[in-house]
Image 1 (cartoon, rainbow, N blue to C red):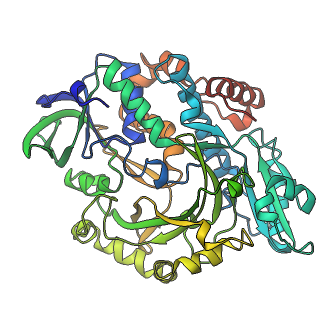
Image 2: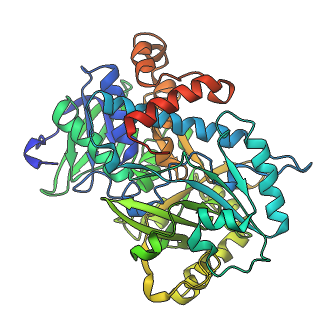
Image 3: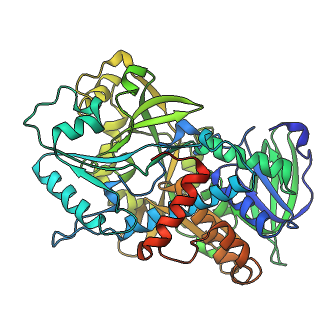
Length: 501
């Protein structure tokens, strides 16, 4: 973004302030500006560019999380049936994202969708008789839903060799494998998408963007407004900015900022930082043999975000393969954060939650310690469960983004880990924050509409309703119950986003 277009000094007062320059703030600012172009909105980003933390392409798996391949979204019940309600919700949420992005393309707010989204089949792969039977039951259940009706299933080695030749190379014919495949899957570069939205906001809207500006504190005022201390990190200048509404989309830094607001709803929350590492190859001979994202089962005691997967990535027009994630640990809440982030986040209001979550997740702690201690050679051994003849020299280790797993107050355990994405809003609807990780960026539009629903319900059901339905034609309807609507919105986004399946 050209710095010459950025206002050097923030105004003392705004209608709305959005903290963080990731996919969430960019999405919320775009939505709000579409609803009411007269709103005075400012975005403060502490780094010199949008989408440099969790939203950056190499800091996440780029999976358009649509629940096609993530097995942790479809647990098996005690009676042997498969529960797919969570998978349906996430699939519907990703369809909302695709509709919104299609609207942005149609309005020519952003161009060249192939620079941020490409078709990429999503597959689930399991090993052994027991898991193959689970996958078959999952397939039969999901196939009945309009959202997953195009899913394919196979245990046939010949078919699997067509789908995933790299994985099937040098497999014993007697080995039992099963896979499902959805050609509707996508690979998404959320960093490029965010910067496209940011450029639109900067050049074609009244939204003001301030890079290298960090919000250090949020304090409530007696008149119901919010006062923030904002630091210009280039010139070391500090000033106070007041806003009627504040959104905290600052990734790992959302938690300490939320706590500084002292709202009742923030009490008891804690955060545990987890970093990740990928094995990555740019060897095009290998890449051409694996044109899909392939997820399998998580190991015992592993968190859902550590489900092993071998993915095709398309970043800046270049294809690569990514395997992992392997868990890492740092006390930082952001990749470019401070090592004091974790110790400084502990206080009297959340220490019980933090201790309770740790006490009830000791196996997870052991798992993280084992992961952190792994050598590259040991990681390659894990890769060889997928790619039998993987060579160490073809793969490099790449550090992924920092995630802060949410810890919530729990009466029974003191505190428990939350692995989803959570929106925290005060009773007055004047401050909101997004906490958590996966499915994260994929469902950003749904999450930000959730913020607007909670904070501006009268406007959303009133003067903003027509514009909302123009942007999201399926809003308010369950796609799983409307096969014709599902087909219609998918055809629309396929055309606008240039998807090929």
